[in-house]
Image (cartoon, rainbow, N blue to C red; front, side):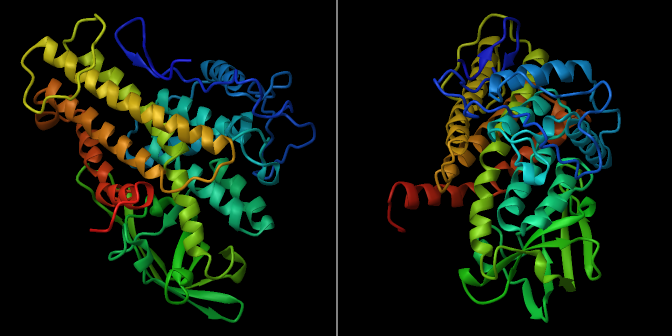
Length: 441
């Protein structure tokens, strides 16, 4: 299987296949469509007229799942409308999730206890990849479910997870992640938002920042301090419409109010909304962050391949095969051979990130625990994303600076790739100290 390959025409296309010919089926021979395990907890049946994804008769391996999903997507147009504002993107995200849930595709890879149909988590990676490669939803927004839902399934009380997770998967709710604070970003353990007990409840006071989609969110996976030290951090699933919650969107340089600061002023959180036990917050956070760097990264890479295709279609490089170069030039490009080398280098960086992400996906599918090695994935993806959009700037001179092209906000957003989710400097420190055993000095 080729992980990524050049298409017969001009474009690069990610060959979206996980290996399934390893001698054993990932679902150990069981049908993903387990009879009688439908859980219509989101209030809708999976068997909507004309849009069944009842795949009885095939095993839930990635290849069979992908083939059926592509056929269904070809027959059901989920293309976004003309509204490309953030409101439009969030509305489109809910539309896509709802349609995929109603048809059953969004249920694969999730446990039956939360309305899922079972099967390996790799099916969720395949689904998100197809969504990203078809531009059906912005991948960063779509992939938030891959960070938050597993955390709530693992740590919330089972009745709470069974009640609320299907609402997230079905597009009925959006959730957010309340981790970063004005003085606590990469150094998450220094957070100061406090939660104090009051009878059976907890009262939360403090501020979070860089909270994606907080203004649209119904729930927040929230970290608060309940005692000193790492063992004094507790995780909650808080309601965003509770009295005392104030959300203020932040304007970023790419012109989208995706992030917000959130203020908690004596917000009462029921005791049953603790994720895990008091003091488990650091463990919740360390379990959550690898999900950001596994399935979410796989989706992001698929999306970036579509941008490379678009760049290739807009460039003056002839259709002949491109030979990757070791690095892309930083000065303006003077010839078709320079452009070909820059495109090849951008492709090579994406291909490298994808190969690494595939290893992570296979480890996740095998049930292995992800740890500091995912910092390698973060560095590779951030580097590849910035290199791709640097190549856009070099190959399309003036487009970013002098026009209102969609390339501009994407380029500006890519500048943050080495900051959000843990800065590149912090990730390299983790790699040096925890993977290579190098000293602190």
